[in-house]
Image (cartoon, helix red, strand yellow):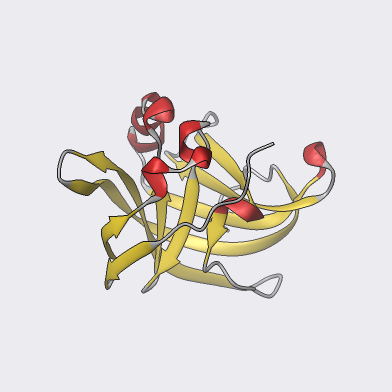
Length: 149
């Protein structure tokens, strides 16, 4: 088990200007983090998971973020990031609620429009690799893997 650490993120609107995330145990373990600020869901990707970035950005039209309970890990609340590429084989990741910041609650049936971006550790600090339109919704169970209607 990873010991919880305080993750700090400095923001300039949607932009991440600094963070200690990449130096934490959670990042060293390969776990991603989703932080929401100024209407943007930012997926922070550690070095160990960098190959996932190509999968989450290839031919993506938008991102569907679904909050719900992840039965496979004991009914834990989690967030699914679906990189919708309009195929039947879209890439996705699911992160535990403990790996999220600022998501908040959304009533079932409501869909919120926002943006989603992918961030990696660059040579001079946080670096955005991609940005997409996004939709946030609440579902009963994850994985959901359904398009936004």
